[in-house]
Image 1 (cartoon, helix red, strand yellow):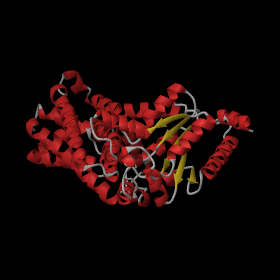
Image 2: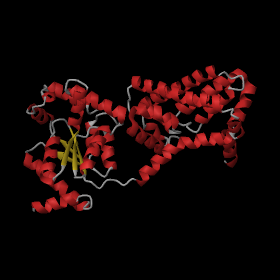
Image 3: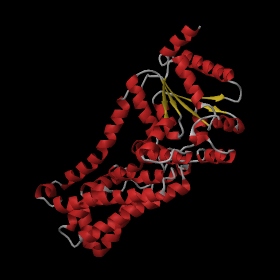
Length: 416
């Protein structure tokens, strides 16, 4: 093992010398060799250890002084990077997370979770940004496939990310790799490139490690369409002093800003687009920031994706879910004044199916949110029955987590 590590370290630190030998030995065949390394580094989940940034830089350096032609090398490795991510995407879509559960020795679950957090934060831009993060670079397209990211959107970011990545490092090596100082200290240049790749990840780790989770009580409300999410929110506002923040209102604002018709189809499409572009928790995260500025306990209505549930739980929040029979819920939405709710039972069921069967963290999936909830309320009876359930849950939470619910405790005592 020690000998393997020594050889592996020598390969990285003296990549220019070894690559120079390969060029001399194999001539033209160095192009498919480099193509294969970049393809496997980006396209195969189990090979994130292969050289990426450093190999591109070293190849660019040698293109300035050997028979390698930079204007053949550059588009070839750009294509290798795009093709690798494309294969990785389709593998992720076909196999999903099952390979990480079945083969944890080869497919590290911690690497998948790290990439998911990165993806939740940066959304579709992850495909571009991940090019500059070892390990995440290999897993990002796989996670995009698992999350059923639209291929057209993925492909656009894939091509752009591959272009920026290969251009910066290949031409960086081509123009700067043969400067006498860098040439004499090439191993240090490679180490700096490798270390720089890990700096953003280390910064993110320390930020996450040192960040104090909020102690501000926050409750996210999820549930099926028309089950009574707004009713819970109104009760918490009136009886427990919560501030009310509506994801529905947030999305309607965005729809109106875009000049679109306010319809349930547009609400679903715009919400999913926002989450894909800005991260799975974008809508809830934006509302959370608004609530944090006010500083009072907050209820956020309505949580619709697994990424949003995850965000609230990571910030010490609670998730309340609510459900009721479909016929009851359809009659209730008919009583609303909202134009998006004036639909037939068939249209109602179609809209609900569209929001309950998505696989990705960023897509609406109400059933998944209900399964992840801390408590589930039954709203098939009258309001008195619903309110009694809310009071009991609030009382339990206040008893189990007094530091988190000081304001609730005071409110409960006042009621008594």
